[in-house]
Amino acid sequence: AASALYQAAILPIYCAAKYAVIGLVRSLGAELKKENIRVNAILPGAVPTNIGLPPRLVKQGITPTLSDDKITKPEHILVAIQELLDDPKAFGETVEVSAAKRYRRKQHDYPDANM
Image 1 (cartoon, rainbow, N blue to C red):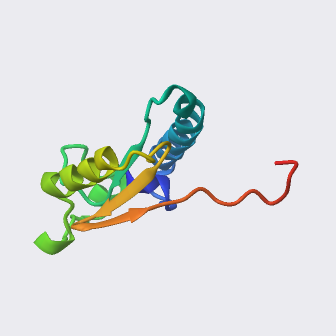
Image 2: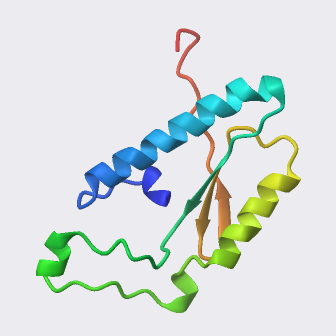
């Protein structure tokens, strides 16, 4: 989920789990590239699910209100998957999908040779 890229004070455990997935995908992607095994991640934006809102928001009467053009639909995710399948150089890639838009999110540069 795109929660791996952005902070969300109301969902800290959820975000932490998603951050971990990016680290796993990038690490495995680099290592398994030697064996020509591709590991990549799709990071969908707002997708209607049955997960529900955090109880704190429900108590405040907050409900999700996104217009249809802001929703990430299954067909948007399929396009991103196909993009990765069609790219023979895609190892450890993370693709954010926000509605119909796709963004390859690169790893930060290492600050120095020690890292």
